[in-house]
Structure formats: C-alpha cells, structure tokens
Image (cartoon, rainbow over all chains, first blue to last red; front, side, top):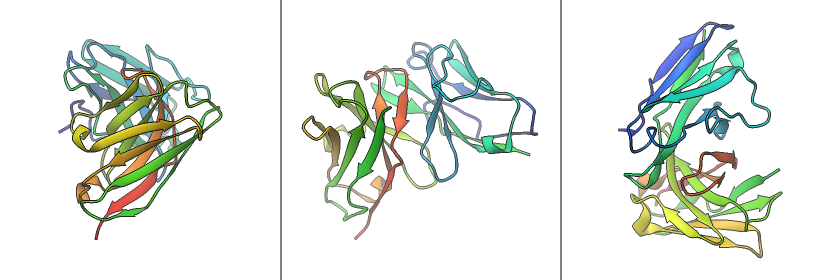
Length: 110
Length: 119
C-alpha cells in the first residue's frame, strides 16, 4: 500500500489531454513539492516536473504539474503514442522521514 | 551535465551483502546529494537513501539497520551496501542525483542495474 495514491491506469486518444492524480496527506504533499517521473518500457525513470511547476531542460511544455492541499496532478496535452509509459509521483514524508512514491499510473494512448 | 553509471554483481546469495557503486561524471561528488532508488521486477519505486560528502547519509527507516552508504571523493563515486539480503531485495537499483535530503527532485538517474538474490 503506497503512501501516495495514484490511479492504476488512464487512457486517452492521440492529441487529447489527460490528467494523473496523486493523493497524499499533510505529512507529505501538504507540506512538500511533488515531483513527477516518466518511465518508458525498459528504461530508467526520467524527471518531468518538480517544484511549483518546473520542467528540466528538454521536457516539452505539454507536461505540467499542479498541487493543492494534499493532492497533486500531472497534466499532459497533445498526447502522442510516445507518451505511453508509467508515471510516478514522489515527495518527502516528514512522518516517515523518507521519500515516498506513488504506485505508478500506466498511460495508454489509444 | 551529470552522468551516472551503476556497477556491481548481478547475483548475490541470500544472507550476503549486496554492494553497488555509482560512478559520477560531469560534476564533483562533493557537490549535491546522491541517492539510491530500487524497483523490484514489475513493481514500483522505493527510495533507499541519500548521502552527502559533508552531511553524511540518510536512510529509509525500513532498510536502515542493513544499510551503509558512502562517498569516495578520490574516485568521484558513491556506494551502497545492503546486508543480509533476501529474495525481497531483488530489484533494479538506480543511482540518482538528489538536491537535499528533503530536496525537490531526483535528476538525473543512472540506467539501473538488476541485482538478483538467489542461491
């Protein structure tokens, strides 16, 4: 049972917009920024979003992040087949004194 | 640009110690925090711990009793030792660049190395 709750899967058609939620508590999302990672099949996770809504160099602005209270959301617009991957949210938890991850959400682009 | 590369045995026997090294290029190991994250086959991600040259190491409480992380500044690399391993420790182990113990991201990640615990 992950501390951060994500939907197991989401799907949408190419060109559409999809959102992935990440729900936590005051000991994690309520007090710390969430970062989001994309894991393409057979590869290492890659940072997509961090901080308030910052993207590393090379990450297109089709990817965005937001958080409010104890929840965070990753948004992806203009879906492409290459976006099919597992997506993970993560943040620090001051009750556990550890970084915690969501269980991951599998995105399917129909 | 920081690049990371894990190395170490791919097979470890139960009850023995898993040892991995992460070579850092493009940046001094004395800067930043460095960490380890693992992923059992077909499962999600688990933070193992972080280490900094000046501040020492911070471990996941669930693994703390079996963990040692260290930095070798002469080789610009950091390492992980996990003792008394069981099959539950079988995973792909990733080394990462961190930005503080409670920092806001892990970036970049090494390609990962699969460690299997089996006799």
